Image 1 (cartoon, rainbow, N blue to C red):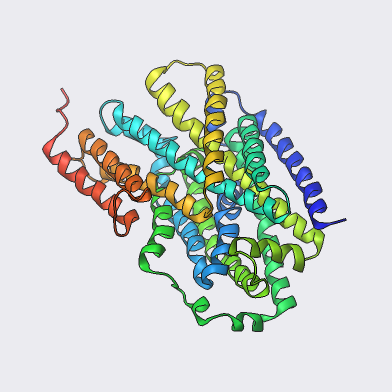
Image 2 (image 1 turned 135 degrees about the vertical axis):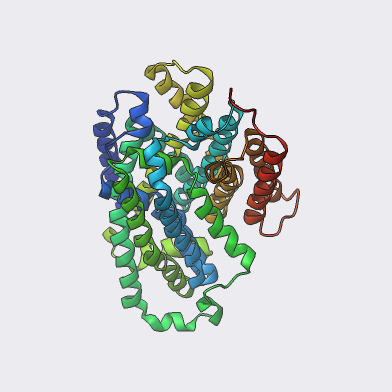
Length: 455
């Protein structure tokens, strides 16, 4: 039996298990709020596992190995940023938990006047999360392509299966599935790491160019683009708020994200090293293919199949979270928060499915047109950071921050990011510059346009 056949069999078994987990979690959903927040149901280790799982299936492993083949050990920077982002989230988790903010829009409603700030953040979140969702789908495409199957199947099947699971199991089921896959992938990449050293030996790495051992093999602007947006956007990322509110206590939220960050930091070096091995062993292959080829040819078929199937399922679990985040932004923030506050749970669950189907279609189109996993993920994170970071922290830290300042900063930050991404304008260090522009506008407009005094 070929490795591909074994992968398909194990993948089907994994998906069946995920559906069972989703069905079990679905029994705990009694309202729309349960589906998107699961208040008080997340334990410490469930949070740790799901947080690790949300990164470890796509950009962290697949993208990290690809960047390792391209740049060497410096390919670990995206993974390092993943760990640092969780340490940043841990620092603000107490504030989010105490106030029970399911989203930043909940904070905006409390802090600023009118509905416009809530709408701006919700739109920015939807755009950012869909971009991140497309980045996850690229990992599915890469794996299917490595198995000799049509790459489009990887995009479409991953997106559709995740869509079904997200609406079946909600936030809690997504976290449980993500935790399961993170454990399997963690041990899998460690086994792959050990196998690469045993099979090829460390001397293989010494044959690579010296630049492959440079800790920063690219220019500063590229380094910033793959790290800072991720770290900054984590502070206002939808799923972060939802998972924090779902925990049993503020202490659980803090230590859950702290442990997840500390665990990811050293693991971040494993995928790039595997990519370096693959680059030397398979010099004729594209960087995006060497990790899969390493697994398929240098590991026992069953071990390789388990790792690949687990990565696909981890990607699916991460996509689940993205669907839940998009539905929360549209249904909770816009529909319930602005249009129909009295809408019942049944209506909201139906609308959740409609919104997720639309997000699924857009993400598939993006994934079919893009090629770089980490760059696509970073684009989504940049939109979130540029549009939402300044209004959030500006409102928390500066009492004179106003509604007009929040709106103007969000519009300028998002416009600067999109304009730079599309090549309409040139911004050096765009991920920093766009946030800096948003901060300047926030302060300036707030000083010029103060909020009316409360009667």
